[in-house]
Length: 277
Image 1: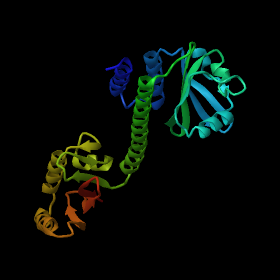
Image 2: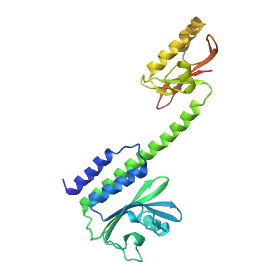
Image 3: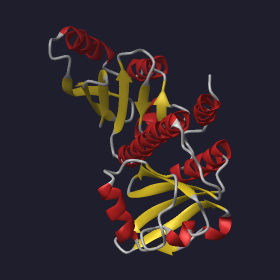
Image 4: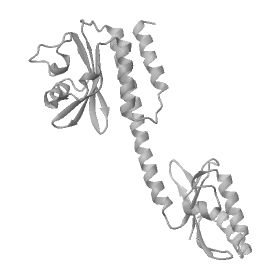
């Protein structure tokens, strides 16, 4: 195994231990520092395209480059001309052709790696004071780094997206005026909103084991004044092809509950949603 193969594996191993719950910007700072050390580069930074007129330096080493602002237009033209592939400058172009002159004016070799950091795209830039050969083993190492960065950034972005969706819908469902209880058919997952947790006497809303939810609903049902009628309806419910019921009356001591049980089936989940009005 070559030195560059070992360094590529080192990058994969260290990024695999990264806490995915941390913000993408923190991951990039960690990764850029790691790549700089592995490649023994003299400069490493992220250049983010904030808008049509601004490209800003971030996560820079050395740090005095942070917040430097560049004109993104000539840089984007360079990227388009290279098909947004990683650019290897074994010899940095002369000043008039060097669109990164403000950053790389004192360097001999550089790498420009486009990375997707939604909502804004970025570049990872590495530079060396002495000329670099960039042999095949080195190029394979950098390609491995690029693919690994792309993989983790995509996963992180998806996770952040789904976290925002989950928080949004949880907030909506917790303020819903009816008690909602979902029990997944997998036997491992269930959920109740705030009204549902209060009705069933649970410790709190959110994720619950199905066994806990089923036991709490059984205890609630056993307190009903019309328990025999409820049992008869339950037999019909669980034997019917529709597997659903609405306007099911549970007469409690101080209130009447109108209960609905609805099947929930998607490609990802299968279970029952209980609604207590």
